[in-house]
Every structure is written in structure tokens, then in C-alpha cells.
Length: 451
Image (cartoon, rainbow, N blue to C red; front, side):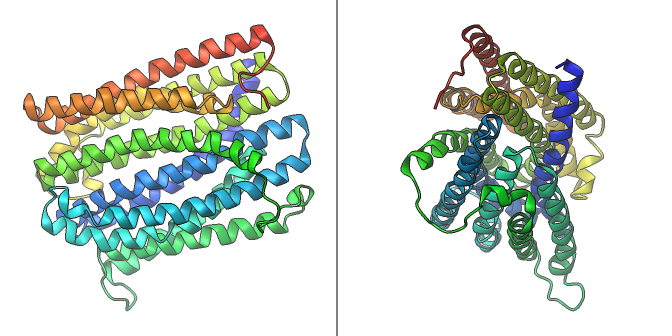
């Protein structure tokens, strides 16, 4: 297989995943843009609420990803019965995870008053956070269907569902936030209800399609508990839990940065929300490329083709580098225009423009580390990357950001410089890790993790 073939296959796989992943984050983007029109305080409340919820949501997404490389590898080996069992076990892991995470968010919400945030922001944040937290269960059920289908290299269905539900979300935002069509004006809470309703639709649509489609009948998909096997549950969780913590360590670093921004002021927090919201768009799009890389790598390992596995991984790094170079330039060149899509406060726009310069610079590092996590996950190598993510952000990036912001007087810029350094360290280490492991697998002609 040539490099051109790898690029074509990866793009065909990645494009629907990119749109699907982008669809998830665009819910937050739509909320922020439309809530921002009601003022800086509601936008700051959305930033605080989403900062907390996004950490929990990403951990759940990480757990759900435990099934994908296992399904892909099983398909490569032709193990049809095992594929069906993986779906059933993954579904109940995700349902249990959603219930536990809902309890965690409710508990965390009780501590918002102790985070030294402006009182007017906290008052608006708590009810909004409760509403969007209710979307965790339907979202995780949707993830069960989505990650299973992606493991089979079938990525378009989730894309269609996500795009449709995002359109519904934006329409409901217009109705509920601003009080159109005779509905009461609900402001920030209206955005929460729109998100919840759209996420309830997602598993209904995806589930009905997969359970009725002849394409999936061969796998004998079961929704009931049945005979769950500990060994299979454990195998999924061995990938899913570290993946969840990878997301937690990175995303919570940005959430902690939001809390530190709140110490500086409402405008600083609002500008951080705008900049991180835009950066999350490119992040989630590259996350789609990373998922495609995970599928390609695990499938080639299942087929025993380790040379092709390495080529597939390197192609993902190359495509990611090209894409993030473009987005980085766009952030820098359009730094004064993009914030105006969210708010008309001149001070917030100026602060956001400054942060977007740094966001543009760390696009390359962010992309490479996301791609690295994906291809290594395809190898079932998740423990080492999890430790690296922890150290890069929580031992290096955040402490340095705090020092630069509050001890060196760099304020908002100092916090983001720290995040940039954490991303860069992670990117370098993960790329070197994949390079060494893939070379070792080719030399030994066996995977790093065996059943």
C-alpha cells in the first residue's frame, strides 16, 4: 500500500469523524455565540459551567473509546461474535459511567461558591450546569453506538445524526434563549435546555438505525445485561479509563486556567471562553483525525501488518500537521474579527485577540499530541501517554502559567504561555513514543499488547 493510498483511506475515514466530533463542540460554540449576545456575565457563566462539564464529558468520551480499537482489531482478525459482545459490554460500561459522572457533577456544583468567582456568575452557572448535566446519559448511549460503528470503519451514520441534532440545537437556542415563537425568554438556561433536547435525539436516531440496519444483524447486537464477562469488561476499561484520564488531565488544565482567569476578572474569563471555544473547534476536528488513526492502526495490527500500521500512523501525523498549520494562521490573521462573532464588548475583543495569537502558535503542538494519543491508543498503549499528559500539564504547564500570570505580572497571557509549554512537551514525547514502538513492532513482528 502506498502513502497516497494511506492518505485516501485515512481521509475517507476521518472526514465523517471530523464532522461528527466538530458537531459535538459546535453545540458549545453555538451556545457561547448566542449567549454572548445577552451580555458578558451570562457568557462568563457559560464559560465556568462548560469548563466543569466539558472535563466530565471528555472523561466519558474517553471511557467510550475503549471499545473502538478492540472492535477494529477484532474485525481485522474476522472475529464476528467477539464484535457483538464488545458492543454489549461497552454499552453497559457507558451507561454506568454516565450515572456516576452525573453524581460527580452534582457534587462539584456545590463547591462553585468556594472557587472565588464573581457571585453574579456563579448564580447563573449552577442551574445551567444542572440542565446540561442531564444530557450525560443520552450522550453516553449515543457514544456506545458511535464508537462501535467507528471501530467497523463505518463513520458516516454518526456524522449525519450529529449534524441534524446540531441544527435542532441552534434552532432551539434561538427560540429558548431569546424567547421567540411565543416561548419565554430563558437566557443561559435556554441554551442548556436546547443542548439537552438535541442530545436526547442523538441516541434515539443512531440506535434505531443500527438496530434495524441489515449491516449490523451479523453481530447480533444486544441491549440487555445478559451474561456480561468480567474479562471483556476489564479489557475495555483498560483502554477506556486511561483514555478518560488523558482527556481529564488536558481538559481540566484548561478548565483550571478558566478558574484562574476568573481571579483576574469577568472580562478575562469571557475572553478566555472565546479563545478556548475557537481552539476547541480545531482540537475536536483533529481529534477526528486521531480517531481515524486509532482505527487504522488497530485494524492493521489485527491483520498482522505492522509496516502498514506504522505508515498509517505517520500519515495521520502529517495530515494533522498540515491542518493545524492552516488553523493556526487563521487564528492569528483573524484574531480581531473572530471574537466579534461572540460579543461586542471592546475590552473582551482586545483580550481575546491577544490570546488567539498564542492559540495560533500552539495549534501545531496541540495537533501532534492529539494524533499521538490516538495512534498509541490503536496500539493499546495508554498508560505511558496518560502519565505524560499528567506531568506535562499539572507538573509543568499550569504551575508555570500561574507563576507567569500572578508572580511575573503577565496576567491572561502568562496562563496561556504555560498551557503552550505543556502542549509542546506532550507533543514531542508522544511522537517519539510512536516512532520507537512502531519500529520495535516491525522488528519483532508482534504487537506491543497481546490478547
